[in-house]
Image (cartoon, rainbow, N blue to C red; front, side, top):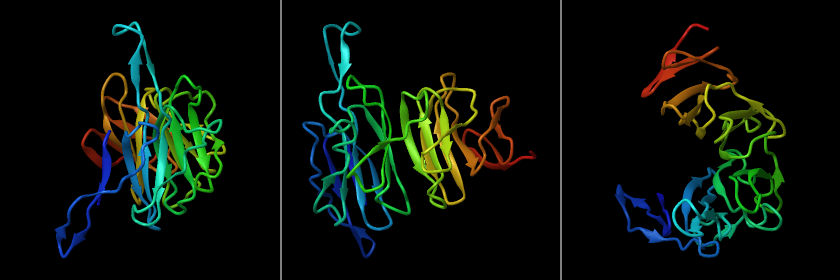
Length: 251
């Protein structure tokens, strides 16, 4: 088991004969002074990914009169030997540097060399969605048109060409060609927070400005939703309300 402690370190424990061992500090490097370790992904091929997200500082006087700044770049560290050695694969995403407003990232469940990373607005102007197919040797921008605040990416484990993106300004997008092109999904709100995947469906977790709806079941291929009186109805698939899932409906 791996645990990321935000602002501190990443730890690992191994269970032997039903008993968890001591927590071991894996000494994941910092990016500058940034130790904001966040999302951990353990790939089925054994690779372990650790994200280092944005470190914000506030300067310029009293609260409200200054500005937020990101003094250090962010990164994604990967280890292929259980945490003994780490490499930052997101050190040259934009203009030879890591992002300065990095949020979450997604790894292709079927190919650990393919990684997507989201960058939110920063003073460096490096916000967007970026993709690597060679585990960080090179990165390509794959940002949907008009999106300035991407949040999270999920790759469909059954078909790596299907990619889902949540954004903080235009809700959700889907792609059927690995991010080459995107289709905006129809939601009655703009703020999308997280995308996750299960073997049969993609689950979206989101927080609209008016209310927090929790989780929604999103059957693969379903791109359009109707707003009901609280629940959401997929035009073909399932309806969902907070804490109630897998409710079949007639479409």
